[in-house]
Amino acid sequence: MSINPDAVGTVSSAVESSWTSRDALLYAVGVGAGQDPLDRAELPFVAENSMEFDQRVLPTFAVVLPDVSGVFGEIGTFNPAMLVHGEERIRLFGELPPRGTISTVAEITAIWDKGKGAVVEITSRSTLEGDSSPLFEVVMSAFIRGEGGWGGDRGPSGPQHEPPDRPADHRVTLTTRPEQALLYRLSGDRNPLHSDPSFAAMAGFDRPILHGLCTYGFTGRAILHALCESDPARLESFGGRFSSPVFPGEELVVEIWRTGATEAVARTLGGDGRIVLDAGHVTVRG
Image (cartoon, rainbow, N blue to C red):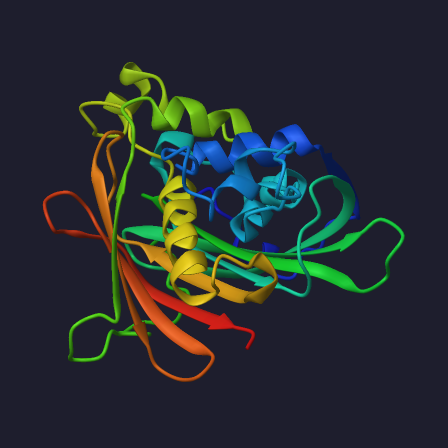
């Protein structure tokens, strides 16, 4: 075993990262925004010089901004082809600006022994330059195949945030493009699993797969328009679990159930009806 369970509690030093208006626009297109150039709800996210709109930023852009590579390197060594994204959750304390600089502190908050693999959870908290209050928090987990079995805590299990036993309140169909992963990778995740057929084959796939966070971004767009009237300031939190790979070019169907005045659960289906993102939980501001 090369994963170090004692790394839990390790905290990084503060790391700065910056983004520009162009970065925010590129991310939006990378998660499918703007496929309909007449869609006025999406125009603020894909153009900075519209006559009627100022540029705004998709809330899920937060997932690509923090640099947690330093603390991630403290968990030990492993075969990167065996790593898959497990879960992702964002909590936003304010609207993301089109450009800015953040300072991020990341912590290894859990390492769980799942028997056939290990789950590593990292929590990062980011503040905007010149502001001491947090701008957003990101919790991500990764499942690393072949790295479990040391007899540690298995962590939480069982169903969480299951949909109610009734039809969804919103059902949104979205289209990914064949080159979607190649476009999304330009926002920072250059893992060859999403671009190199030979590397994908090493991981057991017959072709490169879509980034889990790209599927997450597609789902977040659907939630933003369905629950927040396309206003990014109203999305407070969104988390979900990646349950099946998506291949670029697949259709995605996002199902959303309102469970309260400010809460909802969601899931995303692939083109064949399988669940690709589940345990989705959303909170919104009124």
